[in-house]
Length: 251
Image (cartoon, rainbow, N blue to C red; front, side, top):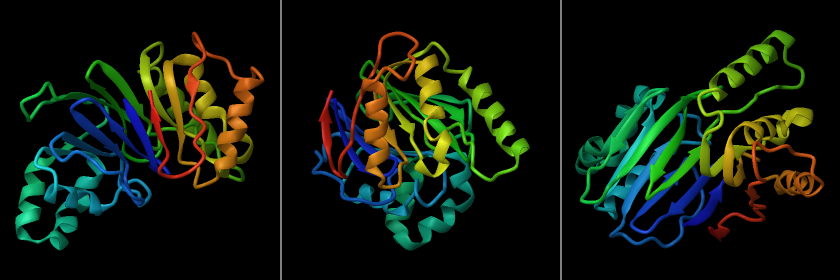
């Protein structure tokens, strides 16, 4: 498995016969084998997780499917208007919308395809649990313990409750790879979400995301791991210290 950090919360996962592209909104994609299957995921409609540029991939990939959060459906038809008739009709046939707490087997091509399950995000849209080629991959989207400085206490308490309630759905499960939020805007609570998930879910390799170009927060979390300041459900995961956009990692 090869994982490339595109930008923000966007990653390209390359498996033996397929690609998984998560939450693309900007950045340069690496060279890709156009003969492979391509599954493009968008966890919700926020600008930093969804860009209609993804639909232009249908011009160069013959085997492509878009797995989009249910909230994107509200603007989807309008988004297609700028693509032209031929491309928009092609894309319309390739899109699959998913609600929270859904599970779908997606195998539109000759291979085994993928299986996708969703959580309800604690902000907007969904988080994805994708099983492909024997690997389970979790992309959190905006699923996070959102505790904001200056917000009313009752709002932060509700956000905490929503987070822990949804976390029960994946507690004690095993994720080979997890893309989890580290958001420096949360200040003193910036590590709470990742700490809690790693203490309740078996994770093989964890990639930080959603850190708004602040690579220092990635380094700070790596240092906490080295100092033993993070608790785990079982063995410590491999934490990938991303240092630049476009960086690739072999797993």
